Length: 405
Image (tube, rainbow, N blue to C red):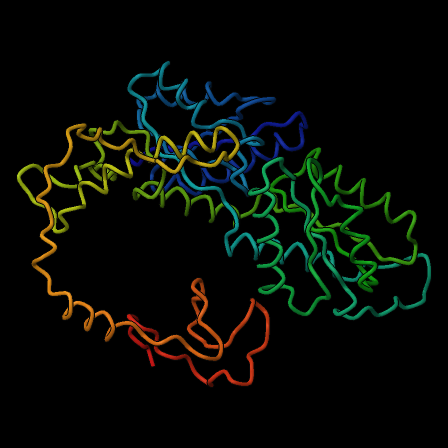
């Protein structure tokens, strides 16, 4: 028998969302009954059943290895709750408990397909019983979508929603005017901001598409914000799509996450002694008994070790300039060096003068080479001045420096 599947919900005070979560757990029980594998679910906070009660029930039935899958479209730990911390507390209560944590559900191609189905339902023309006049035709190029996520204080989580918007536009709504991104709370833009952007881009119809799993308080807030904006913009056709909801397509994604974690693709809680270590062993740069290729490599390694504390100290003091002596030099020997006196008579004065005269170049008559010049051109003045007319086209070879020409 395979390990049981534990669905983790973030919890809600809305009874509609709790009921839909329960129906989805029942759907998965029917789907996984043939494997066979048990299915249970619980909430971290704000709703029943609590996650701890579901785990205790599974352990009481003899299950000590679980596959936990968070029902979340993003990896927002602040919204869903501290799942690793909660599971660690449960392991303290049940010392034999082990679990594998699966990945969040989105962005998955099947999730994007479900969003496209909700969008198609909202785009369908609704019957009008008030008037017999045919509805005005609105081209796809005049229709925009506002994909609305929960919103988070974590910029990385908000970026995930932006990524989903772009993927959805290019894969399922390429014929539409645009797909904008908005959030219910915690960040900008809100739903009114997303609608206003679509209106300024020239949209005549805007469809609000919730990037939400189940109905509840979040969906009601999205609809309320959209209706409040539409009340002040009567010329704009605003429609609200449904959430992804309890469906077979969502169950397929969850089962895929279950199988992936079961195959070892999830985050395991097994002790390190039972898992192959992926941490590289720490070794010395130059083992004992082995001479490095560069004789000064060990010395350079010592310099780096000595410089590192100085760099850290400079950062802590606001980037104060380092002293010229980064490394404390070795103490010098105070004893004077015993040098052999130089025998001047050993040199022949005439030969020495001839050699010196042969190696010393004659000074230039027009335009002297500046001592601090690094460009090798004759006749150039200060930086930024033009070349004088007597300057040659290319650089001249300087004494003692090999020419690169």
